[in-house]
Length: 218
Image (cartoon, rainbow, N blue to C red; front, side, top):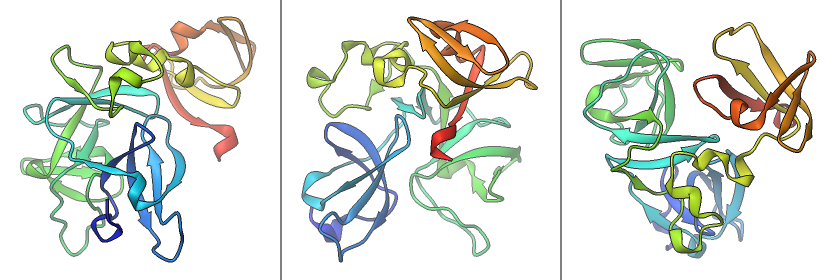
């Protein structure tokens, strides 16, 4: 892409993976500042190294170690993630293209997010957990050279790069008072703070545990 075509919020491919532009700083050689969506790590690139992608209904991708499918038909509920694809903020709102926000309140004409933004139902696509079998995976630009063929499947979030690592903090969904950090890993057994031991597959099950953040990134 040409630098003048790159702007904050665009979804782009860089090194075959899906990213979101969070800043453009023309004075630097690596002027495009990116967030890799699958694990929220920061990347630097030049405009020539990125290729734009416009997300659309029925696309699926990995966001923060979990798989989501974009839906226009389903309306958001409290706690859901939404992707803002057609932003028309009022003067008091502060959101932009392709921002991902969490729903705090649902109203007739739209939602209020945890960032206190009022967003009309026509402005967003709902991020439905899981990969719909008829969805179009977009986390890789070229699936044939992706690191793992399992990126097509519902278990995409268990590929090597997305497995638990030391410092990851998880919350137990059937007892939200339990938040624990990964302190050690032996084979497929994950050791959490407080003396908890779980199998890595259980920890990656979105119906049992919720990944919050990595302590080392704080």
